[in-house]
Amino acid sequence: MSETDVDPELRDDAMDRFPVPDYEELPGDLQERIDEETDRAGFTPNVFSALAYKPSHFRAFFDYHDALVEDTALEREEIEMIVVAVSGVNHCYYCNVAHGALVRIYADDPLLADQLVANYRTADINDAHRTMLDVAVKLTERPTELEEADLEALREAGFSEEALWDIASVTAFYNLSNRLAMFAGMRPNEEFHTLGR
Image 1 (cartoon, helix red, strand yellow):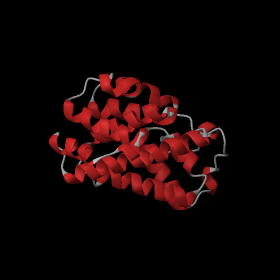
Image 2 (cartoon, rainbow, N blue to C red):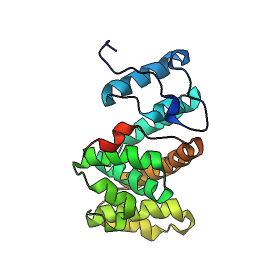
Image 3 (cartoon, rainbow, N blue to C red):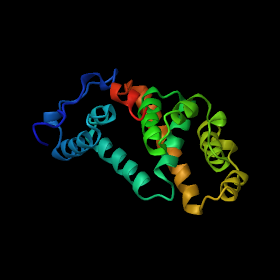
Image 4 (cartoon, rainbow, N blue to C red):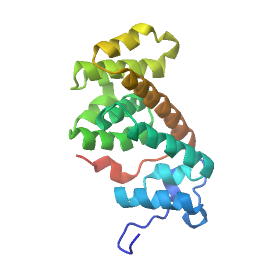
């Protein structure tokens, strides 16, 4: 990083319930990943600061995250829509705000994230995306009620078999993320509130 780049120091207020580690004491690969994200975003998202608490979990979490967004049959906008709808029903403050910003950016729509958080069923989305979110929310709230008919509805909406797997994977991962963020008391960066507006 150059001297003009954003300081990668981890924010002490990234989470309420566990101590945020000192950036200088982190393993080199974590520092490198945090630096990359800081350069990309212009600030260090608090999820990086918080998850650095346990380096082996940090690595696994972000490796899986990267696989979900890089090796997928879904558009990035669709991934973020799932994250926000799931986080909305889970009431995850961090993910609602942080991924709400990403929905606004990837969908190029300043209103969509707020609609999805409040009630995705009334959001301005097409029928295929509503079906996608119906299944994601059902898997979140009532996983034992999921049936073959739910998968068939996704197929009829035009999603491939790989996309079905990816919808479930993103949903499952962000249910984990939501619960961890809430347990740790993660707080979204102020910058996320205004991105893409």
